[in-house]
Amino acid sequence: MVELTGVLGVAVVALGMVLTPGPNMIYLVSRSITQGRRAGVVSLGGVAVGFLVYLLATNLGLSVVFIAVPELYIAVKLAGAAYLAYLAWTALRPGGVSVFAPQDMPHDSPRKLFTMGLMTNLLNPKIAIMYLSLIPQFINLESGHVLFQGFVLGSVQIVVALTINLSIVLAAGSIAIFLARRPGWLKVQRYMMGTALALLAVSVALDTSMPASSS
Image 1 (spheres, helix red, strand yellow):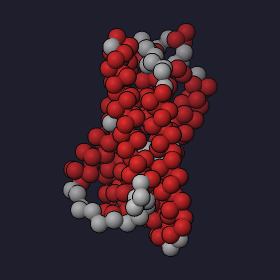
Image 2 (cartoon, one colour):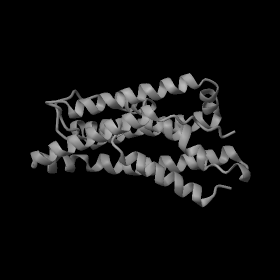
Image 3 (cartoon, one colour):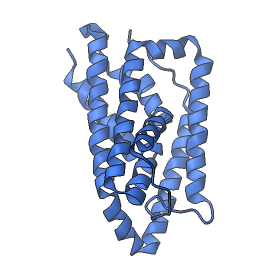
Image 4 (cartoon, rainbow, N blue to C red):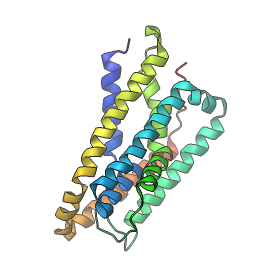
């Protein structure tokens, strides 16, 4: 059986992760503002499938591969940290634009929106670390049914993440209008998001933990 403390622990971790600016949030917000809520929802569908891919891969032994080849895990984390650092630079550099600032972007087809949402999530270092290192810590080996526990706890993360991300997609347009009328706040939001991304990039790069095996 899955313990309540494990469910609550994963829910708290998932909430903290989804509220921290990252690739998923940036992509969903930008698409919702430039192409509308429907585009944001379609993109979120791709993100959801990305979560399912991580859920299946982790519970079917991906963490074992990284334990056997730690250099591969380190390479994945460093690549993710570099991507986060790039996102931070685009927000903090002179002339940078807030993710909530309307921009002229080509309208993509639903298929491309879905695919980009999927790829953005699969390449998101926050999600990789959460599934490979954090969620397995809440599995109680003494309770047995480890695979079942892994799927339940992963499902808790998915529900929390999709609920918050859907709220962000639906509210992105209103937030953009609110900030557009307050240029100073728009600039503050850009610097806050850029700083959070930079700190997350450093945290990911310096993290020395290894994925825990759930088998």
